[in-house]
Image (cartoon, rainbow, N blue to C red; front, side, top):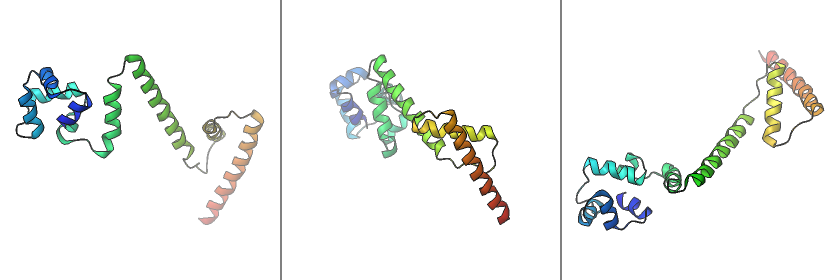
Length: 157
């Protein structure tokens, strides 16, 4: 992994060695697995590569590859560009959570406020605002549906 991160940062073995105050020969031995870095050198590499110690030690798993690449690349960006990455990630997360909530089943017994909450979330998920008339029509239809479902459930018991 040392060589992977060294190359990701565009450093020659000599340049990388200079950053750690180590010879090119020592770096070469670490990469070939002939020798292992001391704990202090390992900690310096974790900081230099801006990575997790486990990833540096054991490698990048398939699950962490994308996240690790995002972290590695975004750490090299100027603050204003990092903010764009953060804003995009927050938008994606919000969208994901909204979609997840929209797919949650609606309970059979709810008060009017809870029903209106579901109506508003469903409308927001589609990206359009409902008129008050549409909202009321949906409320009536949903309440009727829920009452029928609740009645069917109670007959089953």
